[in-house]
Length: 176
Image (tube, rainbow, N blue to C red):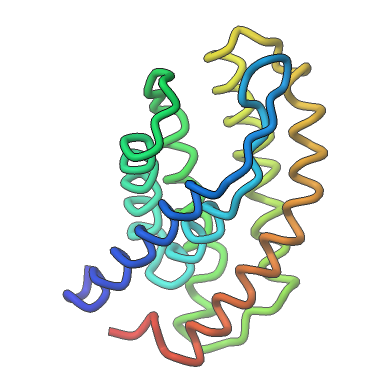
């Protein structure tokens, strides 16, 4: 953390991400929550992009812990999802933080590449594995509907991230 302004901005982003979890839509697969349609990962990735991979990773982990406490569905806490959100923040920082520091414009292509990588490396592999472990359902049974949801959500998330980063550059939210 550079200073209290950055910490305050990250706190506001954390509140926004938790509020977005409250309006997420869950679609059950074979009686369990298999697909989540929401925009929380956009905020976690954006934090990594704006403040770096370390801050993004910490933000992702803290977000998941607080969101579980606020919106507990009655199920057990599973640390795998905390790791996944930390990785999303880290990836955002690794992919695009250098472009923000150099004040380069981050277009739809860059945001799309980030969310394709997040979908393939985290959502399709780790998160599907975590759900399979939690529910006892076969990995491949959970994977097919999740792939369809990710194909729909990737371009939407990329567009929202692009707009968010454009606004943050305009108002210099990443500056101390």
